[in-house]
Amino acid sequence: MTPFTLKHRREGGDTPRLEHWGADSEYGVLRDVLLGPVDHYHWLETSSISRKSLRLGYRFDAAVARAQHAEMVAAYREAGVQVHLLPTDPNLKYQVFARDSSVMTPFGPIVTQMAQWWRRGEYAPVIQFYQAAGIPIYDMISAGSFEGGDFMMLQPGVILCGYTGERSQEPAVQQMQGWLEAEGWEVKRYGMDPFFVHMDALCVMLAERLAAVCVEAVEPELVDWLKAKGIEIVDIPFKDAMELGCNVVALGDGRVLLPSTSKTLKEKCLALGLKVYDPDISMIAKGGGGVHCMCQPLRRDPA
Image (cartoon, rainbow, N blue to C red):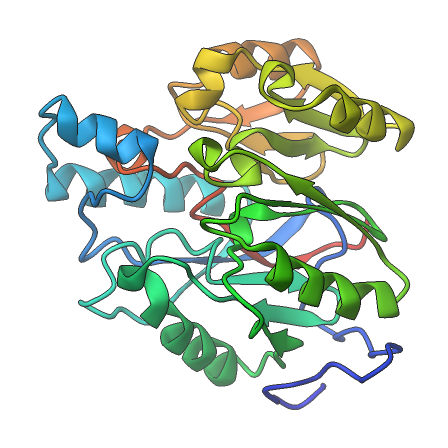
């Protein structure tokens, strides 16, 4: 197996794919997933969703959040997924959202750069995990902030990456783009309003050539581009998307993991013949993140 290194990437491309770890899509059968700990989680003013929860006086219950996290872990295990956990750091209240601090590629994980000061330390346990697991790091973002919720491998060789300028910044996205284009991949940058925080609030793959998209909230040009890639769109209402109804995980083999509150998408998935796992994560979600935000695929079957 490829030994651990902080930079597996080869300058100019032609980086070897990892032998055991890695993913080349958002929908290949998920074998191993990295989740963040919920131990020290509580709501902070990180997004429009968490600000609303705090403004309306909702009460955070840590015991409920832990129970819901355990329910989600059980759903992954029921689906045959091996669950791995990041090392816990009591200073990192939003560490549960493991999607943001790194993103997996076929060539190894990219360690990202968090924008908000209370999340900047997340790089440390991420690197510690990959080193302990013997997973070589592809490279680490240094040109600005870049968060994994904006990174979507729509299909092998094609990446959609959003940026708002507040969480993910265009120079950092361009840095990642340069690396992966050198490997022969296409990377589409998509600028969006900071209100939406990350791309995975608006567009997530459900299965091969099938995506959940809040059509009302994205530009027609993006919809046309997705269709040109042969991707069928399941339209999600704006209200549902703003309650993280688009923020779901494709488990592969016709299965999806989505929050129990995502009623519209659940009905549409079932109508399409998909099997649905739907844990209740409502206490966690009120802090601004859904199941996709908490999921970092470590190993998927090649698509």
